[in-house]
Length: 373
Image 1 (cartoon, rainbow, N blue to C red):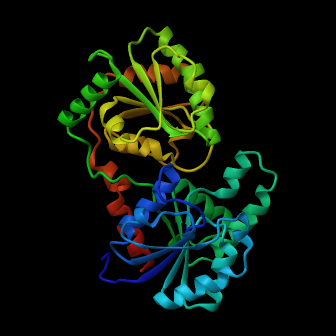
Image 2 (spheres, one colour):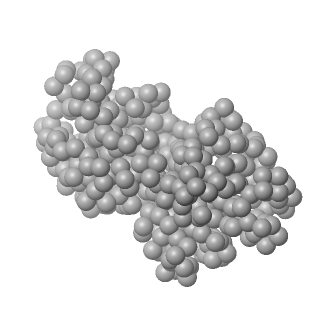
Image 3 (cartoon, rainbow, N blue to C red):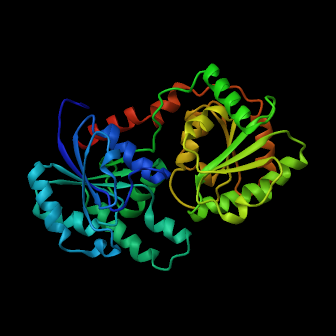
């Protein structure tokens, strides 16, 4: 236990996250996998989540999949019954969208309310051009002000919420997205993975492997993919580099899959993502929009890849923790981006322990468990 106290906790996850495929889904599934080592957790979520993939916690599929669930007043009674049955002391809301329900349950049940924020949602929607972001801003502010504790994915979000929402800093904690590995793979493991990929892809052993992955049904990732193919890759070609850029992930547009790009292999969804994270040398992250910490960048750094990113794409990741393995470039400065790729192809530094203290799930969830005790 974090401090020897085992509490019963209900978490409200308002959408499908199991099996976890995207970074956001993994963030929830893995947080509770490790958090449940300290407290007993029951997750209440939507009907299409697969309980086979629930690790360490109980999953109850009692929320409807309809979008009307967000305004369904009868959910109060379902969650209240669950709180009573489990004798729960805390209710965690993943995102602020069920804020009204959390505030209502706090008023009539003996629980403490925790809001686990993965972005400042109103600002994220503002960036995506939604007119109603100001309404959400007020609702998000009210939800956090009603909470006993607030978790934020990065320090910048925490500081913003304290200043803009008027929160008590003592009730706010940064709970970053994490990695499941406590240290980088050994050089021998990396070389084996690299050789395996080169053999499977039928490329010479001297060819460096670059990587970009993501869920490309998400607009910012699709934009980043286009930046990579149409802006960064031509500059890398112009510089005369020898490399193979691998693109993996869900929902790659058909027109991109059907087009040949020099020194690029569009592979689609990869079952064994770990092989690519271990065997590639440089991760490229040309993300210019969207909110929150970029989970794919955290994972790539944890596996020992060097990485080059736009400033926007690396929000929440301090390069000082990365021992020169992460280079940041100004957004849209593709010349600097391509030059950084060339520089990182020869960078041999090892990721230091400080990185894993910040981004490994065990210390992350230990801090979160202790905070709400």
